Image 1 (tube, one colour):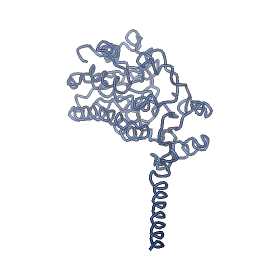
Image 2 (cartoon, helix red, strand yellow):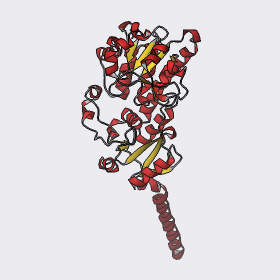
Image 3 (tube, one colour):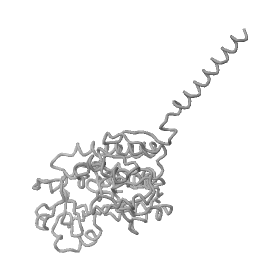
Image 4 (cartoon, one colour):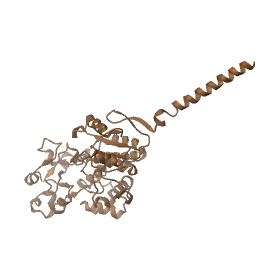
Length: 368
């Protein structure tokens, strides 16, 4: 009997040991015990990343902008230096927080050592095949960054398709609620403008010229992401009428602009906007004669372009009010601006500050 009892005790002890072993090796999983998690990024790559992503840098401004909007405390660096004007609406705790690490966009001035020196635990690479950034680029980045994980995220500059990118980054950053909030804001105004724009007869659509650059003589047609908001809200981009290569920046003459004779001009350069009404070359253009030239708000990120990305979400209602203030009279731009800045730029505007931003862009007080 005693021998039988000993056998039972040995069996029970063995079962207990097995249970402990199973617990150790299966709950939590091995990825959690090492502080990592395995994800599939937006290039369908399997990537092992930290479970707690708390310092992250991106290789291009559109990705950096979204991360600032969703989780600024987790941003470890920015791609370029903010100007004094842009810093006007940046909270004090972030003005000196971020080192400038450069990036691979435009001037292609990225430096791997500077990125690593910012001590991130994750790098985000925006993939955009139209800009030559594809899977091979991501793999090159990963090779150069070594053990520092690189996650590929679709750099979707089309505001009607950017929700998935925002949602993916929200999950990576542990900021799902903020991502959902930004997606909700975007979807609200997209639904508004798409509904209204579809009801505007072709004969009543206003012609619009996007004046890019300090002389106003560069532009984009609707096929380029840079000018997308014009057609989105129901305007007619004048550059569409004669220009076939719609994806690139186009240099035009003042004579061509005069021939187009747009109802509205939208500018993104303060120097051009500051002199257009006094420049005799532009005096005969309908938009100038009728005082219908507008400057995209600039701070802390531009609302219309440069770059196109999540920052132009607030540009959707603004562009609608610029081109068709009567058709979009139900949009309250003061409220929309305050909501966007508070929730996504982390800066609480007063009514006066919001009105100043909007009237400085050329909007009339009565159209806000």
